[in-house]
Length: 141
Image 1 (tube, rainbow, N blue to C red):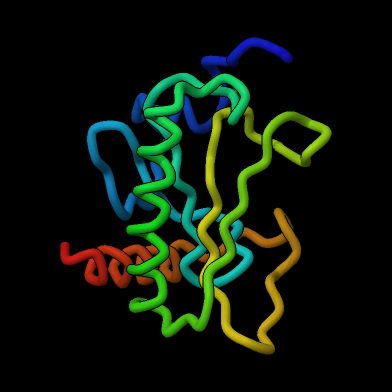
Image 2 (image 1 turned 90 degrees about the horizontal axis):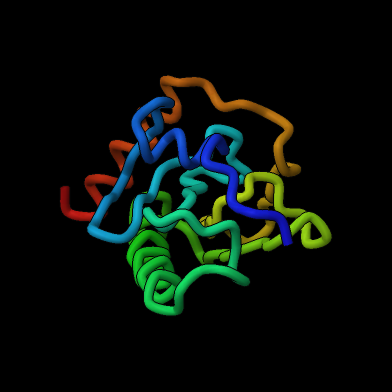
């Protein structure tokens, strides 16, 4: 396993070097919209610590990511009228991980509506702003 790269895009987001469409933040985690969503409301939940994947994250920080993912999933169902949620987490290249900072995908889904292919279309900023506002409202913000 390779060491953690402090220059990955999520580390830069955590350091506010790159903007994001933040929907939720707490002591150990940050949740923001995926700019290439597979479904409306597709959100990424990351730990604030430097963790490459599930193989190197401390258990307490992984538990915090899971708790935040649950909160985001409930809000996404409310905000987007979803009928279900897909949670995905990939660790290391063989699994399909692309950004090497642990992240959990929270994707709201509806029956009969296919997910877009991964990493194929960057969403318009106006749509992402709207989706972030809907998520924040559903979270009680």
